[in-house]
Image (cartoon, rainbow, N blue to C red):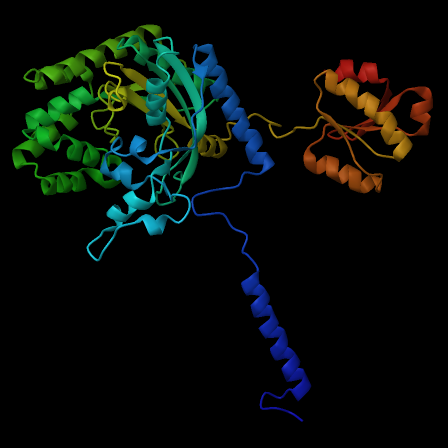
Length: 475
């Protein structure tokens, strides 16, 4: 019997059952995926990331910074109100444990903001600076000021993922807290130069400005009460252009006269030119003097790789900055800043410790990685973690190799033994894919003569040697 589809009945029911079963299995199977904006890192990527970490860490310690770590999760009140409205929106909140809904008090007029306060009192850290300020206040009796700390950890932001912007990423921060000396700013510029010189990244500049200069500018524009709004808009200049910036500033309440003042400021590219413009503003004049002190002394000392550039448009729209601000950019790759930071005078005061000024800089490892990959800045063979592999000819031979492996490792030579005595072709293929430099082969003859046979994987050559000679040669 045939049905309307041309199948025999049994065939039709079998096909129907197969499709039905596949749908059920598909529903039962969890799709393997990562949340948007978060990534796995394969060994080849991790070797390169670890290389960047080691260079940055070495520079931090050379400049006298000490390591700390803080928890991934902070109390929500610790983080909110420190980054501005836009930053607060990007904080990842964490739900309270247990039956949190039973403790809520909401009605038809309740907003999501009202509900958030009731069901979440913790959050993933947004950056490393605010947790550091909290750490300083909590540990002030055990800290010797000025305190130079470095921190290398993940941060999270509920941002829209795009090139160079992730929801989970890694920051490497260096901060000096407990001094108002501008020598600290100079040291951080030198530190940045050390890092990017060691990473061999070309055509890179560190832009510098001062929030006091911006305060003076907004004061002369006639709208000091709009400072935060103006800074946030100005920080978008590179992305949206001058016309859109003017449009947004007008919508924020900036007058036509204020826009003309802004245009005048934007036309200057030299710090010394600002003195006349800001002579009516005490705070603006102070900002100019600070910038001049830093730039003049950096010029005397010289930089190896970085170009120091004054940029009046640099605003860094985070509320806690009060003085000099920095941003590091690579000019060949359009990816945004690869580092940034600045002076913050009042951050610890929100946790109850007044008059403790700090300044810091942060390096974005993920963007630095992308720049180095595109510009081919990584050293050769950076992902080669095994220099020597012992081939496996059987149980007796592999046990004999364990003693030789120990000698290699004690001499700092990365080495391993293939775990099973499978066909030699498979073992060689493994060594080749892993980038192993030498394969050592030990059979009965080698065991009796106490020698080893070495294959150079790059040249394809074979030679006999003793283990002592081999170690001496490749060490």
